[in-house]
Image (tube, rainbow, N blue to C red; front, side):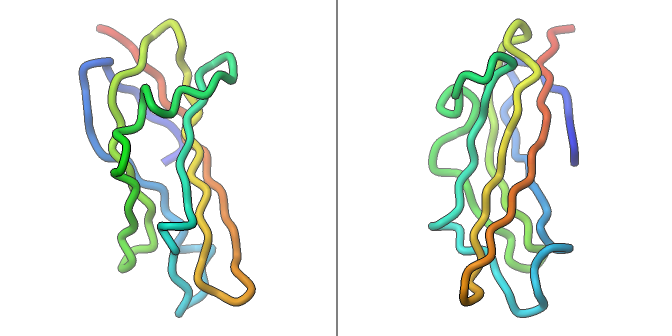
Length: 105
């Protein structure tokens, strides 16, 4: 997923796939990984948009996932950045960005 739209009230899970990046026996180390959010002006609004403590990994599909909330139309589009670290030695690091647009209908 490169981008999506939501309304401010909505709270749901999004994921970012790293399956094409990771080797066959390589997995995501969620404790070393992070997700951040910046509004259209580049201001860090992670705590306003991410439900804290929800970053997790589906090791079967190599997707990092997080629950999102809130946002305001005037501050969108937001940039959600997933940064993951793998268990390889030395560790590989990957990054995916997703654009979130908040629109009230």
